Amino acid sequence: MSEKNNNAVIKSSLERVIFEARIKYNSSPEIQLSGLSCNLSKGGLYLRTQLSLEADDTLSLSFSLPGQEPISCDARVAWTNFAKNKRKPDYATGVGLQFLNLDAEDLAKLEKFIDAYDQEKRMNVVCAWCGKFLGLRKGPSGRTSHGVCEQCRESLAV
Ligand SMILES: [Zn+2]
Image (cartoon, rainbow, N blue to C red; front, side, top):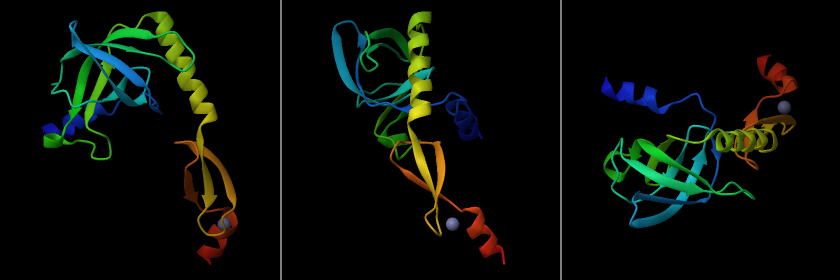
């Protein structure tokens, strides 16, 4: 039962985009660490880390969107994804972070970045039967997804 509730919290309605960048972070001012992110939304990002963090720990973050000044903020560990409790096995070991105090300007930058990504980076959809191009769909750029075109659907229905 609690598992179900946890999942509801993890699944936010925020759109995530693939975002692999170097994230500088620390849990105490003396120790500066860095790791790679996997994805990003307006509300947070996924950080690859082996650091034994727990839910509700807070980190200071600094990262840059392509060609932009670094964004700094604090973030809360929303969920963890370590070997002992891997909630998302397809993700690298790490934590889901929730931004706590992004300033309005940085939030606007994030929104712009995510919206632009959303428009440009889509995966191709092709008919699984005849290979006809069916358009673009939200998803990782360069990937291909499959659908069924109208002609094939008709012929299959017969
Ligand atoms: Zn087809």
